[in-house]
Image (cartoon, rainbow, N blue to C red):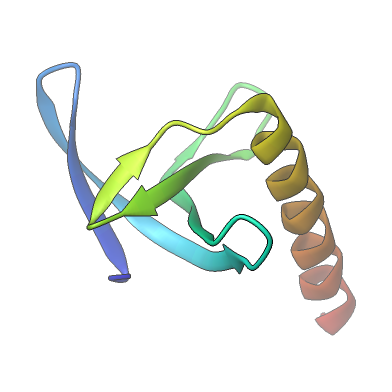
Amino acid sequence: MKDKIITTVNGIETEFDVLFTTHDEKNNKDYVVYTDNKVNEKGEANVYLGRYDDNSILPITSEEKEKLEKIVSIVQKEICNED
């Protein structure tokens, strides 16, 4: 997976930065966590979750989203503890 993703969103080519990727051994799928480096109204960075295959970002199920959100939470805690 590349460090950047360029895709079309609502007809506009948009660039995203890959935060990290992960592979699920149980379902043999690859996932990506990425951002557009913008901040939402809560002051938090926009972070997106997806499954990737052959350089395409694919939608994820609610179960996959729940698993990835747990991983993101763990990574955030680890980063905060490093400071």
